[in-house]
Each structure stands twice: as structure tokens, then as C-alpha cells.
Picture 1 (tube, rainbow, N blue to C red):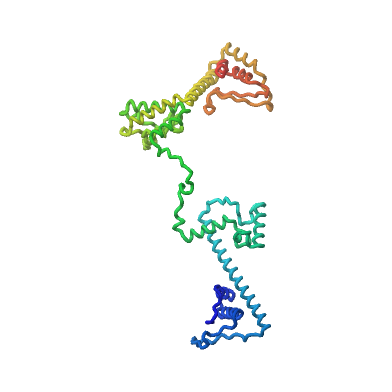
Picture 2 (cartoon, helix red, strand yellow; picture 1 turned 30 degrees about the horizontal axis):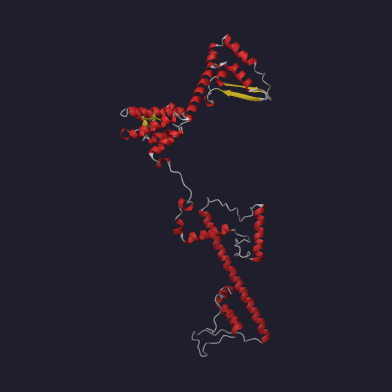
Length: 415
């Protein structure tokens, strides 16, 4: 109603300072207007108040000295009201931000914070010192040199940039849930990362060649699969050549769990079929007659034949023959020797070997040497011997000891 309107924002600060009392806020604003340009007067001098409310009674203008003190107090009161209002706005924004951060943490409880920042008292020594310094710098200056003021967590601490960004992101998700529901794909977030193609998405030829390469060190699996595929090729009409029992002991021990074995059969169009039979459950790999592809059979047989020429296959086959010989020697000196006994000539040869072997050191000195014939997991009867050797004993001493245990054949095979 006056000729001069208060600056923008002052009415809101005056209402905040007077706890919403409109009359007190109006008096505060009019006092501020008097300080700036004199007492407010009705516009045009003849305006009539038709509201029926009694006019607002203001004090008579004070004297010049008293007026200066009143103006100063009014200005201080106005400035204090503005500061309190700004502080209330800041606290309200801080509460909204903390609420958004809490809701974001609840929705993404499994996300691990890799920034190392923490608002609690459990922060480590060095990080706690840095946070205290940052809080002191923020309290002292309010602003970093050339940057925005530091964000606070409402408890006197300093929020990290990652925490503030997370709060803003959470607030954005709450304001626009439709955009937050659309997650970026791997190609968008990591455009230079190439994910390998799944085996099932490769061509049949690639699947067969890859599986055959993985089977090279497994001699029995390669030989068994080659026999199976050649049987299907030569007799495609006979069902028994197109069916494999997965519960068969030999298949389970040498083929089923070898890498690439059943993937190769799957590439040849074998399908796993389970059914209930009297006394148990049938678990089979079956190639239906109409799915037997002559081209795939030719490719699979060729890949397995090439695998049999590889260095990995040849080395594994030589090692398999060596283990077979070791198992035979172990059995001959186990149950067979206990049943038939040892001849005098054999005993004399073994005693000659033992004569070149040093005496076994007492317990607590030296090291224990244990020898397994064949695969350690097989536990061949008679295929395990053990004794102590000193640190200055040689490999020849160990060979003489094995010759005394198993006869001359074992040292000859090892040499």
C-alpha cells in the first residue's frame, strides 16, 4: 500500500523472523522503508481505506539522535532475521539431501563405496586428520580458493564430492524415476570392451575344432569319442551306436568330466535325455537318426584324428604307458609277491642294490621321501614306499633303494 515496495526476498525473511506474525512483519518492513526513504504515505494523498480495519498505529518519528540508534537497531534486527532465514533454508536443504542419500543407500545396499570417505567416527587416523583439517578450513573461510563452498553433512563434518554427487543423483532419481529405470548397457558404459562369443553362438565347425583342441591331453577321451563317431558313421541306422550311457563307469571315469568332451557331442547334435526306468533313472546322450549329419561326423572324426597327432596327445600317451608299467611293477611286488614269495636270485639282486644305499637316519633328522607307482589317487597295492634320507644323500642312493624294494626293472625304467 506504500509508495515504495520492499526489496525482493525481505517479506519472506521478515515473516521467518517473526514466526509468521503478519502485523509484526509489516511493522518491521515499514521501519526498514522509513530508514531508506522516510515514512510511507498514502498514494495520491486521498486514498481511502475501505477495509474497515483500524489503521496500523506507528510511533511518532523520533528525534535525530534517537532516530539514528533506532535505525541501526532496526537494520541489525533485519540483518539478523535475514541470516536466520538463510540458515533455516540451508538446514532444510541439508535435511532433504540427507533423506535422498538415505533412500539411495537403501535402494543400493549392495553397492561398495570405493571412495574411502566416511561420515562416522570410525575413519582411520590419516583420513580423520584430513577431514578435521578440511572441516576447520571450511569453518574458517567458508570457501576454498577459487572454488565453491564445501558441502557439509549437517553434523559439523564435511561431505566428500562423491557423497554430494551421490545425493544429487539420488534426488534426480526420485524426481525422474522413468529416466532412472533405464540402465545403460555394457556397450554404452564400456565401448572398448569386447565380450567373447558364447560357445553355443559359434558355428558348428568352430565348436568342434575348439573342443578337439581342449581334449588333446586326455588320451582315453579322444580314443573313446573317435570310436563312438566312427561307429555312427559306419552304422547310422543302429541305435546302439547313437546312444551313450552317462552312468557307465568307464565313460564317467575317462570321458564325461573331461573339458570339451560333451560339448563336442552336443555340437554333433547329441541331446541329453533323462527317463525313469525300473530300478533307477536313465541318463543318456542320444543322437536321433534324422539329426545324424554326415558332414558333422566327418568334421568331428577329422578333428579327433588331428588331435591324436598333436604333441600334447603323444606326451600324454607316453606318460599313460609309463604309469601302466609302474602299476604292474607295484602289483608284482604287492599281493603277488606276498602270495608266491621271492626267489633266491631275486633276493640276491635286491640285496646288492640295498648294499649301495646309505643307512636310514634316525627320526628327527633328514627328510622323508615317498614314492608312488602309478597315479597317486589310484593307491596301487604295493605301489607306495617311504623312508628317510640325509641332506647329503644323492639321487643314485634313492635309485639303489628303489632297486632293493622292487628289483632291477624299476631303476631301468626310471633311467
